[in-house]
Length: 329
Image: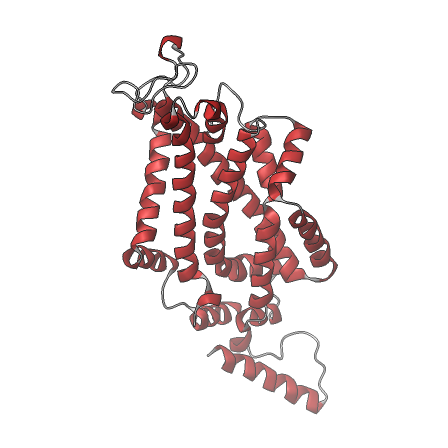
């Protein structure tokens, strides 16, 4: 239907050129061939997917048990940290030097640290920091990267060149070293980690989104909308961005574990979360010297990092296999 309308408009234009009529204005174009609503509806009908995004995601969990288990683990971790004041058996900040470096017991499930604080309770509260640092900077960097990628891919030219060269410079540096540089420059603390991870992570997203836009802007429905004078901003928001959402979902699940590991590394080096607050990386740093004395208390936060990162990676792999169009036959 859409192509018939476009061909009809083209035929009328060719006839007017052959007859020597002027091409100013748009009165000569048949109304039913240029009606934006008709064209957009026809275009959307042409590209409508067999499955909605929601159906695809539920299909993943029905057929991929590993992805389902990973999603359950992530949800359990999130709920445990959110309701830490209810779940935690002890106050994570109360010290008891008489109980320092105790092993697991009925009162302290994972033992105590060098200050006599309950390790399990501190892990619940430390998980809040690790998850927040994994989720929020990832979301911020993806918003920045998506916006710049859309602009670079759709506008092109010098704008594209400038944005991509900046992205190339950022990607040339290891993200951990760049985050360390920012942390040392601004100062230690949780806010610094948020700023550093948001700044260093957007370049990869921008490049991926740009490549998607370069492919999508050549589609017939985008060319049709452009030919009838639809604003660029509307084309980007209404037609291009929705088609990038599956890729962005995959990128999000793949970027979160990277930020969690970066935060853990920064905290382990002493430039991340600062006492009295805690994170899993900081707990590993503070208890590493007592590995032979209280191995459970020392290894527990590291095991939690491992489990959460692996769960996000398995979930990201499953989403990529289902949602990434480049992997389809």
